[in-house]
Length: 314
Image 1: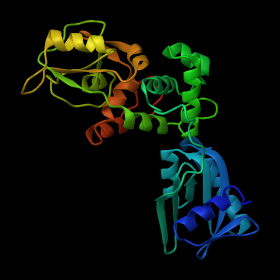
Image 2 (image 1 turned 180 degrees about the horizontal axis):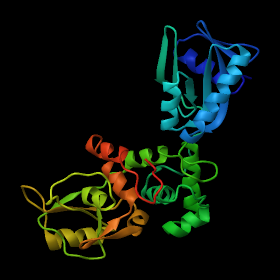
Image 3 (image 1 turned 90 degrees about the horizontal axis):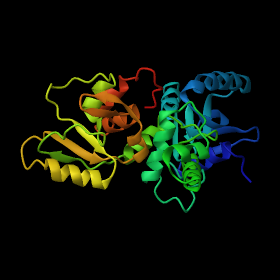
Image 4 (image 1 turned 90 degrees about the vertical axis):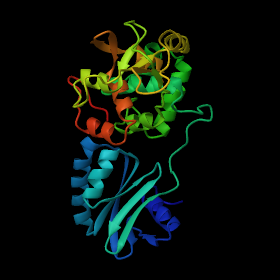
């Protein structure tokens, strides 16, 4: 039976046709390098600095040439810190990076963590979106299954399944807290509202939520736009969507006066942030998910935006 961590690194490198030898003292030989391998449950940006300092001390004592970190989950910011520090790593969800003299490996590898349960087919179904948004709205709070079920209106059984699947996917801690920005980024990849162009701006009504660019401006995001930018408005269900399309009408050609979509998350829709003119405003997580759909301008805005009084989750 192989040793967890070091042996996994050896096997992953062998799968990439890179010979590696696991020594009896648990150091790993890769080419001319001897690496000290450290195994962790998860690594996030706040704790990566302390881990690196401790590993370097241990590597010096072991007379190793370098350090290699193995963890079930390594957050994106933590990966960046490790890579910029010249430290190799294996995220057991399926990615390996190693750099040394005459060697550069940055590749996907077979996942080494468990898969979600068979009953969870779509991690970000409407129910999954609800659970993810609930976690992202209160990332520092340890929300239990029953509390998430209460907030989202989903059954405790379904909430439990989805939380377990998100843990298996490396998006939620064992404590129930979201791993950020990983959960946000995964949800943003699945966030796909269908927007309909409108011939006119709908009248004020509690059935709408302002999101997108104008919602971001309301939240204080560093957005620059024209005074007549068309509002992007969410409704909560198909009936309200059909009512809006039939009463306001779709824009046939030319620029739309507004756009409307059904929110991918009913719970995300329900948590409004305030009022901007005629419309209630969507919460900062929903607005950020909309901005993230634009990999250029939207991501630049997110990089420069920390909502006042809120924990940044992207």
